[in-house]
Image (tube, rainbow, N blue to C red; front, side, top):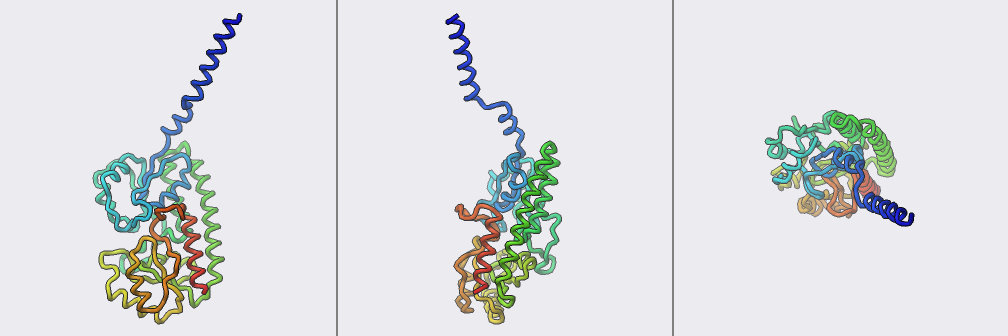
Length: 300
């Protein structure tokens, strides 16, 4: 009897150890079933992660702190896109480098998250791609992500819809916060001046005039003529500060500030990506930081 009890006890112990040390079938299935998503840059990654939750793995091509306008793809980027179930991009001609990246990728669908956004034209035939700087537009990004993730992974479609609904509630809160902050800014000082005129959608949503040394990133940015034109425009505004972008070379705006006498505000604005450090981890935080900097600067 003692020997039988010993054998049973020993086998029970083995089963406990084996169970503790081995991954469950459910965990293995969960990992295998995750949707593999690649997006073009960090802001989109955060937006899509809020929709996908733990049902997907999300990677982005342009590293934090990088410029999605002028990125140069590397071979590992092609591999990442090729191995993904979907490749989400902004569109509106932001990622002009995509053609060289995906010309050999035939099976991965490429989805522009701005498909339903009403684009703002900044010059003849050219639209501003920075639609994410208006939270209302981000809700359209979210809807597009839900649509395509549900097609790829219909089993979890309800989860994507629930995640999206919760996230859009947070975006509504963000929108209300920015509107409340804007009330503190005198109307004649609601002028956002940057190197690249990237805040057009933000300005349209919240009643700010926006301008830049140049309209969109290009190889002719920051010319002496562009700098001189902005200096002239600043003489006709009441803007107490100009701003630096987190991904822009400061030298051009430093020239504008020197020649116009309008100082640069000490908190830069985030436009094209989340920073390399962990000071701002999400789109929501990025917009909060931007709104706080803009309203604090222009309320002085």
